[in-house]
Amino acid sequence: MKIHALPRSIRPVSSLAGKLPTAQFSYAFGTETYIRTRDTTGTPIPEDDLFAGLLDRSRTTLDL
Image (cartoon, rainbow, N blue to C red; front, side):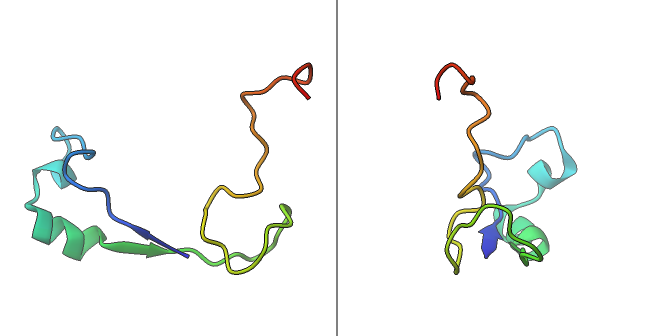
């Protein structure tokens, strides 16, 4: 699974990364790769959602 760098509209301008031109930011922080080493969610492979299968912690036990 790959995650792409955040566009300039989402990056905070106060940080060093926020001050980089978009092309330089994409080159430096372009893509992160994640490797699943163990699965506790039971989601199908290949994954296309980093958070698939995780419980919604905003719900209470009364909602279940």
